[in-house]
Amino acid sequence: MQVLIGEDFVEVRLSRWQKVLGLMRDIRVCRSEISDVCVVAEPVREAMTAGMKVGLRLPWLYFVARTMRLDQVFVVRRRVPALSFAVHGDGPLRRVLVSTPDAEQLAERLSV
Image (cartoon, rainbow, N blue to C red):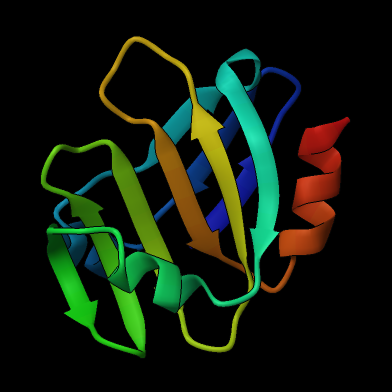
């Protein structure tokens, strides 16, 4: 999984197996539709408390899943901080939470 930040967009590129097992595709969001950027220290805990999900779920280890309402996406693993941001677009997606060792740096870049 890669998180790419362009001038006008943020893109989360998933590997093929993450797309298949997580029942989702790559995520691309305009930067103007993003707010509430932060780093989550324990993303697996947050994913576990988010309600009903579909996709790959290994409790306390790894999640590549989305909520049943399609409003939240989780690509998180244990002991890896996550980048979290809210989405205010036309589609159903409202929140993205993705684990990456670069979460702090990416959050700083998005907050500017």
